[in-house]
Length: 232
Image 1 (cartoon, one colour):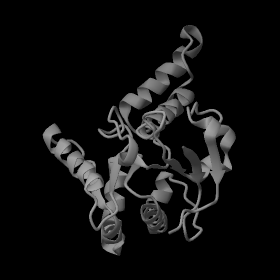
Image 2 (cartoon, one colour):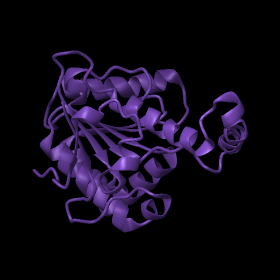
Image 3 (cartoon, one colour):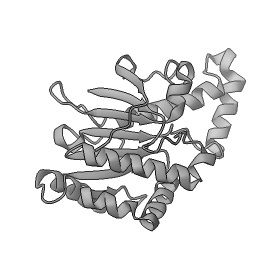
């Protein structure tokens, strides 16, 4: 397995997936160009995980308007994880993904665009050709405006010393890295499996003491911080 971080895209633009940055066309286009480059390079199945359904829809809308989505579909069968819906519908989409890899025709496998903490990231097995690369975009912090998240942080801060709980900020960040580990864990399912795990966000490279050393990422011993962009 190769595990690495990428902090910039094919055009050299910084990729730091904060809310402010993800709102810009520059970020959206650079992420799209990077994803297309990976799809042109890596055969068979690719999983791409985003922090939220909102960002997924935002990127899809932008890429449809620029033609990037069409270019992705020229290379691979593109499947998008639905938000909500019936389990049978989701299972049918998964089967389309598996079949596109198993019965490869003009396209070289499939791309599954999903969300951390979603249906794809938890419990599903993508061994062998079903996931030769897993790409994560950004760091999937919980929604800071969610009332439950806010109350949990306050509770932990208030009881951290008396009950030995983690401080609110530390608890909040750990939730993100648990979600990241879950997503990355869809790849490499047995001892003879192989693939690439690509963490896309400049924060991993620029501030590793916070975003790598303190994260508890289970893949840390093999992690490489890299400026290398995969090109076709």
